[in-house]
Image 1: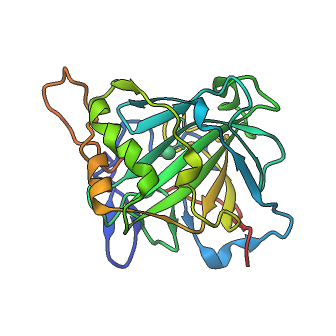
Image 2: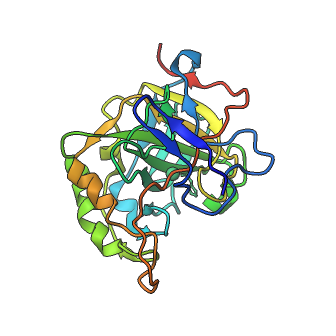
Length: 268
Ligand SMILES: NS(=O)(=O)/N=C1/NCCS1
Ligand SMILES: [Zn+2]
């Protein structure tokens, strides 16, 4: 297994000894892969970027499950009830799920970094283009198919909205476990300021790694408590039947080269 350095900051140098899935570290022929390091001074302010307008209906929240890589909170995306528009997006996008990536320690865990700064975790809210495609599986293959909002998590005060989710995680401890989870408003996980973000053309960071994503990375982080994040780490990569149980930690992909891409900012 190739060992190469992933995002390293002044305090912590990571190795790829923690790559979490056996897939390719770089998609074959990929020239717009994710995640990346966002070099703030190299990002370009785009005055034409509009405010982002998420419009989520908590009643579309349906279930939470452990897919063996993260835990996903899934939304009913058969209608345009929970949508994302604006920002860099030309079309209407439907929320289908959100999930997180985190480390075994609070020193790392995010997939994207800002000037090499690592965060303990990163939230991804996944949407697909419902103006152009009729289902996620179709949109995931198209370059304008997906929009993912990334939000960094920092250790601080307890996040009251997150607690409802934290409380149910023990019920999906093992891979392939699923429980009903309803009336959760994902907007409560967004930072107070969603007008300041970076955006770039990239890919999914887990299979199928397709180069279908308009990434929208929030400048402002959210805070969660140490104990709340510790519950994420109590999840397992492994199913109940497996002999050896493996803690679900370090479920992030190694960073990919920018390959000449420009990261735009919505703020100066
Ligand atoms: N982490 S991610 O959001 O870029 N990857 C995904 N793979 C399938 C649905 S979302
Ligand atoms: Zn993700």
